[in-house]
Length: 231
Image (cartoon, rainbow, N blue to C red; front, side, top):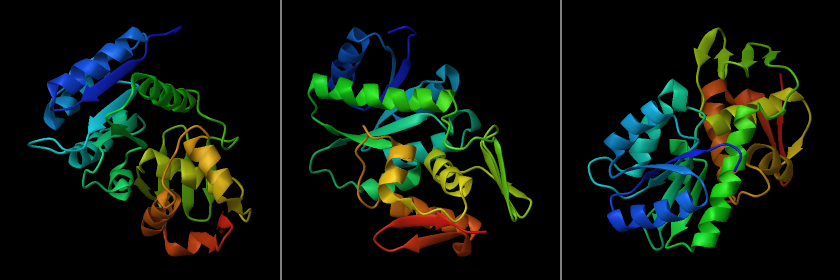
């Protein structure tokens, strides 16, 4: 690994922390750990990790709430976050994505599978640092909407707002070519990456959240095909 990447691992079970930390450190990652959401937020702000792996079920502050709080921090709004969930756990992927997570990992997990998933997530993190070329210009202005990729902000009728990273990337993709129909496959590949497995409703959830923020009229659905941005 040419450059040491930082991972924050959050779980209230010490044996889980030790097992995953051991395997990640063997691979060359710098691993920080926390046993609750409050400590995780403090460490994340201080260490600025490339990836946060976050358990869902924790005392005091569960993973969903912790993720929401992390996304409120300006320096962490684009950090890759993956939920760690137990099989059979009463957990909704949709709730996780709505909270701002990028992916989820099911435990127990074999070391080789874990490292494969982490490598895929790290590639995604690198694309963010490199400003993945979804659009050629850092500034897109369409009607009353301005998308500033350099500052990771959007403005709707002169009102600035910060979107969760995947919502921002999805909006940037659609607005990069107004009127073009992006298939679901194109969206998955451009926004989530071909190596990342997400649920079938992931795009629908993100589209719904975008419509709530910028207005229903800007994103049109073509049933069975995909979505397009209209002025």
